[in-house]
Amino acid sequence: MIEILDTLVSLDLFKVFFCCDLEKCHGACCVEGDAGAPVNIEEVGLLEDALEVVWDDLQAEAQQQIDAEGVVYPDREGELVTQIINGKDCVFVKHEGGCAFCAIDSAYRCGKFNWQKPISCALYPVRLSTVGGMTAVNVHRWDICQPARELGKKLQLPVYQFLKEPLIRRFGQEWWNECDLAAKELKKAGYLD
Image (tube, rainbow, N blue to C red):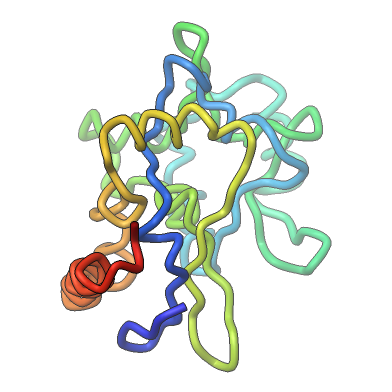
């Protein structure tokens, strides 16, 4: 790991190639797993605000789950995550053309809502944790994302470049500039070969 400003960054951010390939994964990250997407307390209100815009795009079971339990719940570790249905599907997922998509992200891209989606979703496959009071930036490896790693390798697109916009959204432009500089220095020193 290397230190960038107030974060500890895994070298995997620079070594692992990644580019979502929806034609192959069909948005499985929105419908697989044993818990919803991690959210912070500030995002709960945004999720609730989004309901007015995306409600009709949600599955009937998702609407019932939200009506009964709200938009989030605490997972096994006590962290807030989005509600799920059928033991796996995020309540905010919508299905189109055989793919699962985030209804909030779709509304954002169409100009119907002013917030994209939880930062944990936007940053995937990056996962954040706290280590010694610092934010650790790690790359999560999930078998359903193998097509994304293959496409990323074909395109020679490392995770940090694939996630440029959400990383800037989370950490700021200065952090991303330092990250990009670190990648160039690591490559020059032979650490990324």
